[in-house]
Length: 230
Image 1 (tube, helix red, strand yellow):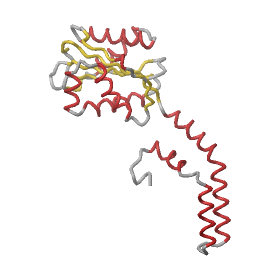
Image 2 (image 1 turned 120 degrees about the vertical axis):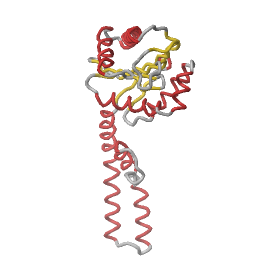
Image 3 (image 1 turned 135 degrees about the vertical axis):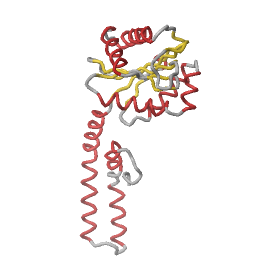
Image 4 (image 1 turned 180 degrees about the vertical axis):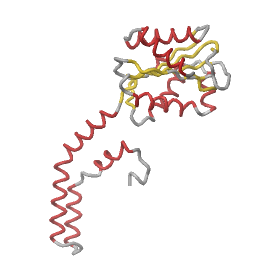
């Protein structure tokens, strides 16, 4: 049923476990069926035995599954005060330095390490996606949790955008070096949110940090493997 309803594969085990308990009800239904002559005594014994076994193993099975699922989740830190409005920067280079400095302070990382990784990614290919938006990203050695920062520039910046637009909204995604899937999942959630033209335009034109934070937070909330920490 979970597969037919197109549930994400990460939810299948939990759904199956949720349907495991209920041994008492199975026994009651079995006894009613037996008293009504619908099933034999042998089938009733089988129902009782399977109900007792499922009830006994439910606790350990659930505990094991929760632990296993947690291993596949990754923490994403994105707070309202991680959104910076009216940032003054005269160039992309100046903006990269400001962002790297902010990340280093908030994440207790080395500025040069963050700056070099973010700059290297931009040199490989522009992270501008058009519509005055860029999503720079980097994987940092020693980082334990993923972080999302948003910078809304007072003036548009040249960012080699595919549509030629000046970038004003920058979503910076920083993830652990040893967690490539975290970067992919977060970037996908951001891209899905910003792909909508109306949403993109409203975020670029807005100067309301809470609105920007809440809008982008929804995208992370929909990420199946993201454990959002505010």
